[in-house]
Image (tube, rainbow, N blue to C red):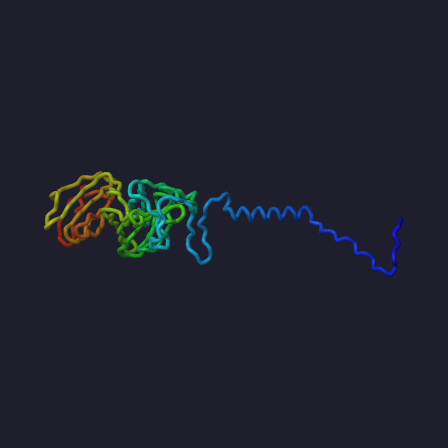
Length: 299
């Protein structure tokens, strides 16, 4: 039986239908959710150290050593490890024949890992920072670096190399960063410069390293006398000689003919590496005490 319809009654509203969502819109929403979830988990959970606005480096994951609250002087926290097996670094600086200096980092218990910078701190891995007088010049991802003369003003300076983990924390031993420092004196444009390698690097247990040379000559000045007694050192043209000199008073070493000079701090060994690219007889003397330390005979 059909129900009677009342003309006075309003017509029944049609049932509401849910809005249709196209397949394309659904797919876009799913893709956005996937991307958002991926960013939140860090692409598989890999730690990052990207900067947030107004912040310094975030600390990545990694349980190597002990993370200290003490900064390294440039805003990076120290990651302390035991002295035994800790990373070590030595720095050798050689004048470049065309411009500036060539720097070589000799590391022990450490490897450069440029492909994982920003990740978790792993034992004995990371990169290095090069500082000039406490100001960062460059981040180093390998053992060699060329320092242009234009980046070093004339006068005495301190070059410091410090080792960092992948998460940008500084490796440390006994509360001190693992680093080494070299004294560098830059001459005016067109004049030679020199460097002084200290007897031991700061914050490491490494022993002094001898710069690569074909010949090594160790000299001592004490009470106005030279030991061993002044003599001649014969070299073939092109050979490199390392002069290790220790003076009991502050002085300046000078190699005549090559116009090479080196500051001699009182009681500390200083090293000058020279390439014998000129033939002849050249005296090596001190300025203040006017002593002839040796003669270089280059054939």
